[in-house]
Image (cartoon, rainbow over the protein chains, first blue to last red):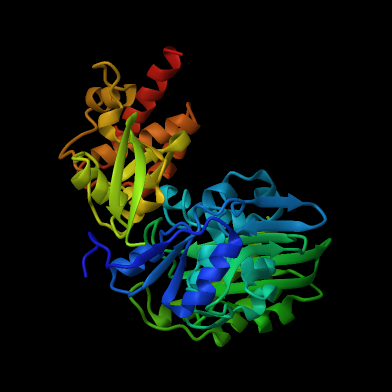
Length: 285
Length: 160
């Protein structure tokens, strides 16, 4: 396969959400939805066959990024990573998402790539995915029967598998919880590289005591995962050196990474706990 | 559809085309419109050699854009920066600061530089280097490219 040319496919350019839904109801899993295209086109150049491409760029009204102090953050399907990076409300209230968007891909891809697209790609290495898992929220799916919402905790069902049905597409990602103190960190070789390990945390702090935490890690399992044992360790406690040491040990025991081109299982297992610990420290700084 | 009739506004001129839907903007610019200055480097979004600027100064990658989705878009390529025979300050700076060696990354670098300065007329060195993360250069070590952008920033400020 050549990265110069794309295989043949039929392109559909719906002009509205109902039209897009109709198209998906007709073609189902023969169709791929294209938002920014920065991921899908690479897949197609690598040989993935897609008979029907449904482009969303001419459906107006999907590129919203709406923050409300009470309602939370609503990210439309076509809202780009560049929009996230430029948004002071996201930077201030959901720093984990802002930090992940700042490093995901390159400045050029960020002008087209979308948060919702990153979530739907369901790569276990997704940078924005780690952030949204830590922050919590729901994926809003639209099909012929109307809208339904799936909690992000249940959205990734397996390696690159999601709860989306072939006749639905994701119109929005919604974060309703208050951001808490959050942060994102990752390890790569070069800046525009895929992560070899990434982590995002959201801490609900009352003074020095952590009332609850969502600790998310990527690149250590077939999907992104929450480090539940570590979350239990930290809950209700002051986050001291000793507590962080326990978190680090729990993560190391818990994770089941693999060898791949970016890193080895051994290395990932060695440093995952350290990365998560440092991400917690970053969130508290 | 397998083909689509579109109009692209490239460097200020309108081009009406009937494109196969699986052609990238890069292929259409180079092969259908005969504008080869936008380069093919990797085809997968990592090198930035195919960087062009669209509506309002945003830099995008032509290799990962379907031409058929760009109906009505205003696109600027490196050859479109010249005005009445005068080079753009970014182009002048790339020459004066010796920021070109083999030249292959240069059109992409120049277009990215234009988009950096469109958004942030006085970038710091750190800001420049962060914004250049999507453009790879094998020859220069980036130093003179950064200096060229700083020079262009000064020139453009003084002519405002």
